[in-house]
Length: 414
Image (tube, rainbow, N blue to C red; front, side):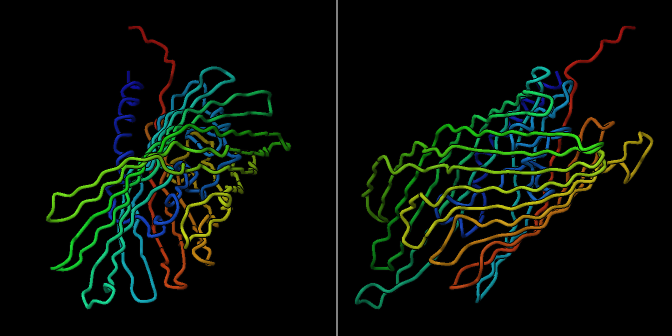
């Protein structure tokens, strides 16, 4: 019964995840471009290791970066996991700076074994977010009057997946995620033309949905008492169904114009990645990832945006707790460190928008090791102040809770 109550709790929380993109005051000014800012979709342990996970197996936690990893879940365990974050972001230009705080649920997921060779995971998380406000002023042609225009955007794309992992041999595991992308983006333009002008608002709501597949494999072999794992991931390029509702209204009049139309579809880009992990006698593990997404062939119809293929490099280290059952305190903790460098798909004019981050965290076993609390701190930077652009610096706390229940328990008779 506890398992089913936790599943119900998780999917009730999912309502908050789907809506959370609309409630943030300011996410990133770079979400103005293209499809918004792409989220790093790793779970709690991955985030503590710089977003690394292509060759890392699931165990007492979930790893959604590679669907092949689900097979690492214990055959007697049912895992449920929820992740949260809180960050402080500083936006800096050549003239001024602004600080914003933000926090929300990052993801939720469950994982379990179906049989000795088959495991599953189900989860929900954001894929991209749009949240910005831009205020500008200008003079009317031939007039001294000043008018104000505000551009804003909100919303994003969410991703719901059902993943399966299959062991084909003692060394090889493969996996596949079937993902449903859905969401909407609201783009709003409002103008104030002064006392004698005609104020108006232009609202464009875009709706997107569609299915896609991504695949993964992990091949492991022993090196004496150590283990070496090679992992790979691949996702198809996919066009999402896209429609648009346009509403135009004028202040102090009854004139409102509405229209619905099909628009050029948004595309989820082709993705390919490779990773390596080396586990030293179950004492520590080091992992490296490389990931590439093919954005360069897409047309965002923005004269200021020249998109390119994105690339992401990451590495992480995990130090496992001591195997001695009598160990207490710090000996029971897992310690994790990581770093990443991301060449985003954005070229604003000729200026590349890149980011990097450093991470550190630990895992705390609770309730007789049946659950794990994962906590990590992330410090990073995105963007630049060149040519009037904005540099973002942030500190972020990531918290995830991995709850474990036994599928089978022996009945006690009294």
